[in-house]
Amino acid sequence: MCATAKIHDPHFLPVIFEHPPEMVESGAHLLMENLAMVNPNLGYSVDEAFLYREYRKAREAGEETFRGFMSKHANVEIGLALRSDRWAGADFWEEQGRCISLDDILRRADVVTVGIDGGGLDDLLGMYVIGRDRETREWLGWGHAWAHETAVVRRKSEASRFQDLVACGDMTIVRRVGDDTAEVAEYVRRIHEAELLDHIGIDPSGVGQILDSLAEAGIPDGIVVGISQGWKLGGPLKPPSASWLKGYWCMVTSP
Image (tube, rainbow, N blue to C red; front, side, top):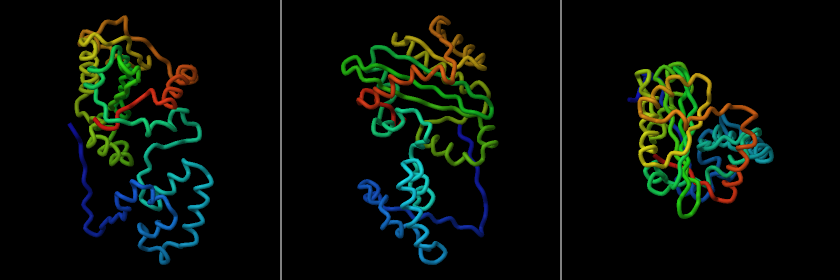
């Protein structure tokens, strides 16, 4: 169930200028000469020389800085945040996106593993499923996130982003404690009953409710493995990044 909120302000009319879809598709929206199309106050309250100078500086600074500039000054969707300390595979994440559902993975995979990162009342609960295609040997990925409505209230700056994720089917906002872990367990049960489930990796911190839900769903204890976060994950993360580069890993771009 989704939690929504509205603000009534009759004195404020938000208007956003964006490039037409065909320009976004061709990449023309990233050109400096097209900044004027989405900056109606250019030359008035927006200084043209300053904007163009900052554009050039952002271009030279790298992908992360440029994306931030275009999001702020050209209303361009920022997409994947490529931080300087990012995982190596992040550079190839978006280009490997395909429309893959959990049902697709259950139909195509010969083995499936699940990763779960527990949340809380003010944090996200995340689940990610990876299946190996029995014919192509590609890795197929699908993920989902859950948040209690308390998290939406406490993180008001992220509320609109949460609703965007809910709208596209990548996230569920729950009202009752336990609904999130019950849904996770149901997904895992489907994989287990399809006789595809190998192991489940879980961050050992605060996972009592998740383990209880998995047990109630009939998931054997022996396939649950504790995976600590931090520097210990450095080694295991290298093979996935190489798989992205080679095009062997495909992940979901829609529900």
